[in-house]
Length: 497
Ligand code: BES
Ligand code: MN
Ligand code: ZN
Image (cartoon, rainbow, N blue to C red):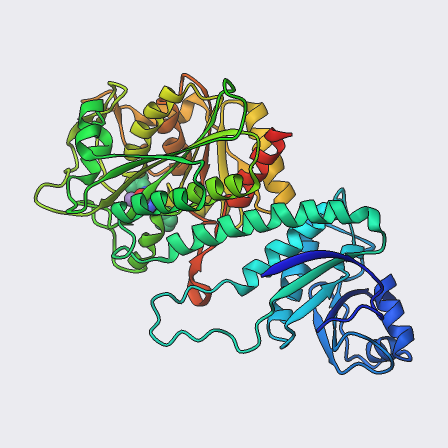
């Protein structure tokens, strides 16, 4: 989709559809008021007779509006009662409007939703969110459907308007960030949605090379199993033993910052299918374990967004990737493996494999002399129990880093919630036979998993994002969400400032 910034009035700007806001009980925005006047009171009459609902997120399409209006349609978007909206409310109505526009038949549209007042948010932010909502509404994953049909009347262009020319550059900045983030999310969603037989560790390595084609400034390196053996990555390799697909450790480097400024390193869990291994998972919804590489996908998406925006930061993306399958050679419960750090691990449950591949990747991350390391993983079912599908679990000993990530989540609506990393939880990992066990018992499963990772991240500032709840949706809209690409990209944008 194309986005641009325009100044003009709602009644005189020609478009396939004018998108305007109304609030309860009968408050029209400035643009809605102009359309109402030019149409001889059509909008206010429709509200009065109950045909237009003004609740937050309700939309009404007026076809062939009355009077002398240059737009072919009007989409009226309800804002509810509040004069100033929360960012969450704005995002909700932005996506309702985007979905309604998709179904409207309009090929282009002009949005005046920038008029809505949002708590502590400027017009650039509104533009960024309108772009994100539109791209989300057009996203389809149909590359494996034999009869995929593109929509007959797709929305191709959205103009984001403002009353004053002065707002134009802010809107354009919002559009630029919004499109880069949306492209990153779309990439993350597509990689996540691909099934295990189309998205193997080798396919992810190819994906990194393809990203380098799009952004030639990237440096890409893929470590093979023999390289991992040389580095002593016994934990990572213990997971791939049961798989016929070779494990890969993918490294992507983007150097947009000053030469000697330390990089931010993102480490994404890339288990392309998690059966549990010998500790085999139960069958129900096991297909969803193709999404167990969504942490990796978010690293690809963020690298893409940052490269598209040409942000002045140094960034390294590291993706340890493997399958987790049962086999005669597979690691067994009770086996003890030696990680790259030298610490030994008793594998009490082969389904706690994410931390095994991440611990070696996190040790490897130290080689880049990082400013900050953030790992992103669909790590624990326990995180879904704790926070549901709404918030990413955030863990860090570094409160300044945690706060920066929480802020980035707030500002994009891709929110995280901090959980504790106390020593009492860490003690649950002790083993009679090795330096630690790979599980910490039933209690506080997402925290003990984070404590495990923490033992490998002593040399730098580190945060862990458990995205098990937010990375994909189940049920009728089953599919990857592209989270937390917005949070990560916003964090890097703030850092670049
Ligand atoms: N990939 C799963 C975590 C997961 C499960 C994410 C369900 C989303 C939905 C991870 O590898 C795993 O299996 N974790 C185990 C850990 C346990 C064995 C300590 C879990 O959460 O059950
Ligand atoms: Mn598992
Ligand atoms: Zn897993």
